[in-house]
Length: 344
Image 1 (spheres, helix red, strand yellow):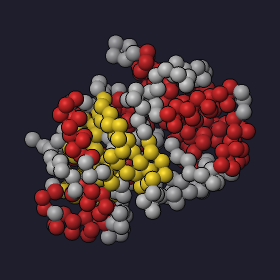
Image 2 (spheres, helix red, strand yellow):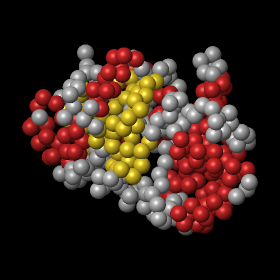
Image 3 (cartoon, one colour):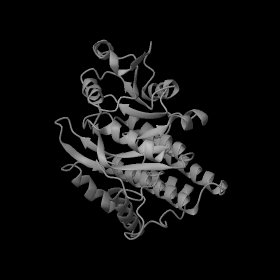
Image 4 (cartoon, one colour):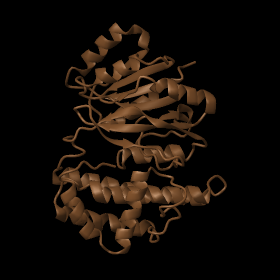
């Protein structure tokens, strides 16, 4: 019988960062875990650092999977899914870390509530160690709308039984979390920051991209919107398992991905690129749902299935679109983003 939790770490050239995450796990009071590190043929000293750590900490149940070639982040994470042995899987980035009581609190929830998935609150931290944003959970958090894997644990049997992997041509977290949510009956929440997500502001995901990579990412976002549209149709067909609320929450996620990528995909690019990006994404969402501006949850009152930051951003953007002022709003955002950090 395997451990309760597999902590899966996808590693590639993070030799300067990975020890912080491993040392945070070492400090945990809870120990019924395995650490499964999959290294994607790192060209730095990552493998040497990891092997030395394993040798010096034989009691930590660490397994290292080494690749003979670089296959990319998606393949690396999927190898973790394929090889994990825990009852639950927690996917982590190699440069992130958890609070000292993270695993204990997660294990207590598992024992008490037996959920299919657990969410914890996540702090975005810069390289100076300062918190720049916290992803707070809503009291009524939708399982469809927590579209990050950071700090989450998922029942491994769901992944294995339904052959759920991370996909290349869509936003990886969006695909993975929605596919898992199709089969999750029960979720649990810990309304406390237990996971720290290191943000590299000069990373490929945030700096100004060249035209080729920008177009590729833009296409990935369009694919993700179409995928959510297909998932909404899936819910429509399987009415014996899903409710009206499931559909409206997933339609709200469609708006979330739509608006956040209007704001963030071209964040470091020209104003002209921002306007063009909006035009493209607007055309896609009209194909998927011509009534996208009308959703049960588009109100500041009542149930809030997403965190406040996200829900209010969606509501404000929907009002702006109804007034046909999105191009003007993008001018304002273009100026503001030069002075303040914004992220999804």
